[in-house]
Image (cartoon, rainbow, N blue to C red):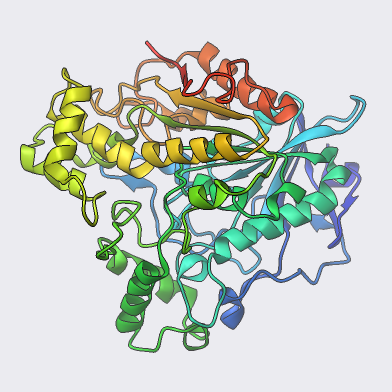
Length: 485
């Protein structure tokens, strides 16, 4: 099969030709918005000017400017972050996997938003390959969006949350074009993980979402992860100080992308606490959505009618501790420091928090307690809050889950960490780079039947809005445990 053997598909911007695979056709690197260049890196996404010749969509394209993040401590994260910054101007693109034609009717569409702390990641990551979705009858779309300073730095003369605006622009493009790829624009599920899940939560709380999204899946995100404008301005001030310029879109217009990327490590550990607010992401990243109200609070007053599947992993916090060798020597002071990350203003202090965890988990040692406190503060508590807000306000159904299968990586310390559910969702357990003592899935073969169950549950939800377990509205507080011992 050669490139010329496949008929092109004409999109609203121009014709594209993809590559035939065993289970359908893949189309890489299709622009949904104009390249963000110069001053326009800090503007909202603009329509692409388009093309007239058939565009070769058989190879992956450029990615957003970003630092290398393929290794974290002793853990290989290359399957998650992919090849890093692949330079090129036209990186606001989507990849599309579509099943072989033949079945009657249009297919459900699933659109994935990658994570990476708002500073890294792309739709080129090996974990985000959509072949299994196409194999099982779904059109899968993965999205690149602006990261770091172009995507999320608060600026007085630019719109906030430009990376999220990119995802919204991609959803508009998908709505207008996906039927040409065999997808049903009226049955679209938006799903994301980590930073991508926070973006999904932000879009879910947008009044415009019901016109673009029918269902949503939030994997290890939080409905309380937005920075206040005051917190965001702390980052803005530091960027201006580091560059020695005023920090406005106008002042940054001529600063090369490479210099903005090189600046990111100097923002690590920036203290964003204010008298009334803690850093909602515990200092892991200087960027997030910027909003005066948290998405969970906005959603609580908004009936979108969108169905929601939402959950987290049992050992979320271990990803940020085990690869750095921080678990074995955990002290009481470490527990108090971790608890203090998520406290602000009046109310119980860190010591009260640690005592409460000991009551709830009487058999947990210091390392496990530290993992629990960190994971709850980063993701799990905000997941519960977003789920409750949706269940109470929305006419759409709300389903909750906890992913509990534990990897033996890093001498068994990684467990059911942040990111661990992704190989199961994408049914990618055979990916070689996921296996080994310093790889995500460790050395013990993971259960293939669990991957089939989770992958097909995500598809069932996208197709029907059901999961096979009770919705929150039917059984308040029910959390389906996936891969539990």
